Image (cartoon, one colour):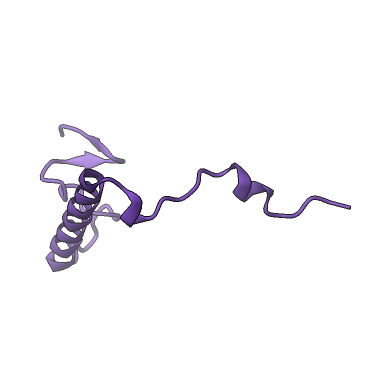
Length: 73
């Protein structure tokens, strides 16, 4: 008899519910979600670039970034 396919889920860390987290962690997660929504809304409001480099706007975090790294150009 073979082992069940849920062996991969046994190795994974248990998921914690939002309500079980400490208040500081809940506040941090809510603030991070608000920042992500703000960045996404700002990106949606920008005009579409024609013949651009493609991908996400490189200045969406108020600094020039490529592949997640801040760089000078």
